[in-house]
Length: 92
Image (tube, rainbow, N blue to C red; front, side):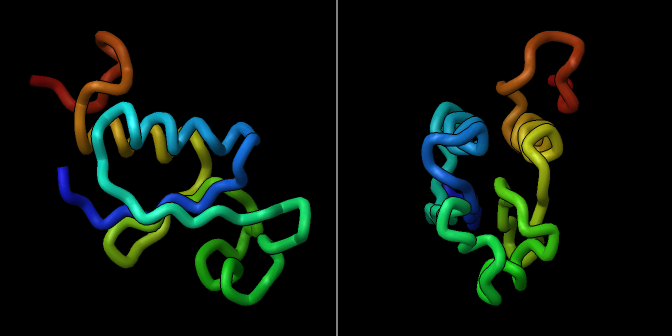
């Protein structure tokens, strides 16, 4: 599946859930690790992505989605295989 996605995350933290979902659903993405232990989330480059200074964030074709639950819901809606049963946003 070809999609212009950029996940911003910190390895070995709960933001890994977004990468797990992207990989499990087969999305192509450009990985952008942010080291919060070195305050990279406070740098100008990341502030231009997410002024909340939090990870994860997901760049989607020029827009940014933040917060893990919102990102996972979007991924389910985009692919429809992430959430079980009636909780799914997209219905076949």
